[in-house]
Length: 206
Image 1 (cartoon, one colour):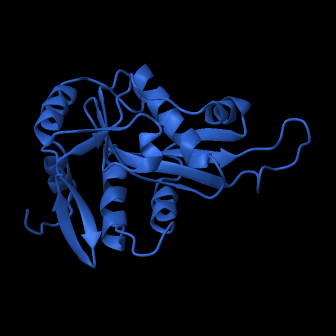
Image 2 (image 1 turned 45 degrees about the horizontal axis):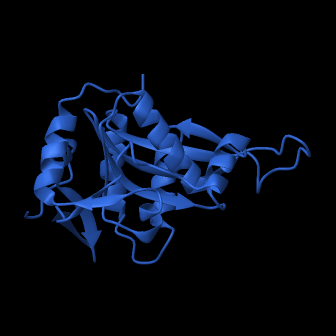
């Protein structure tokens, strides 16, 4: 797919056709990998430790309160990021239109000691992605404190289940996500699942 401006219209058209952009050495490139990685919502599983952290109240989960900060946290997590300023601007526009969302893990006070887990009230980690119909296209995640991104992922899956979503696309397989039940499927199968998910009426936020 040739270089196109990252307008909301172009981005939505790309996503509904199984395509997404990345900045590669200063140039926007478009991808539709084969195989494609997804996390089946009925096959998602997290470690006992992760679920204990999720239930402990160590992190407060918030939705869409710091979208750009989450994007920049993802961009800062390693050198050579594909999340360029152009990408940040484009997805912030999608966020303003209600199509891109962040799931955020914020540090809380320890309930027994009153001591902050890290610095209480600060963003500890999170993830962001695009929601269209019953599909959520996960873009990236980051942690500034141990387990923060894992808790955000658990929160994402729980939210998708409650709200009737059908597809969690994670684009590329990683060993980290494989531990949560991620699988790879052929692109043709992915596109069929995507078509079905796009026909689902689901809302990520009220």
